[in-house]
Amino acid sequence: MCMTKSELEAKVEEVRKYKAMAEEASNIQKALEQEIISYMNENNLTEEFTDSAKITYKPQTRATLDKKRLEEDLGSLEEYTKTTTYNVLRIK
Image (cartoon, one colour):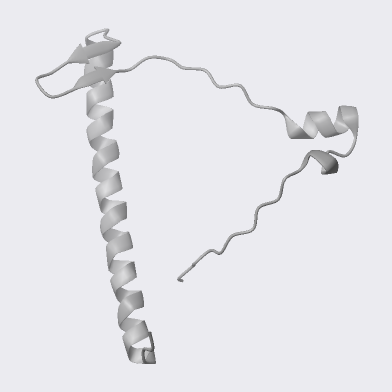
């Protein structure tokens, strides 16, 4: 597909427009989620059901490895490192 620079510029502007819309939608979503969390906290709930949804707000844990500490204790972790290469599109 061959396009001119002006067509490319139009595509970039369209991408910027949709990124702005996505950011705005994300902000709205976060605000709505915060209202739901407030409802759950105010009513001391960890689980709630509506006609169309099951809502849960419970603690969860996640275990991760401390790479810096492992390297301090064991030395280089190079032989255990997996490197993945992929393309990234950035528009500024």
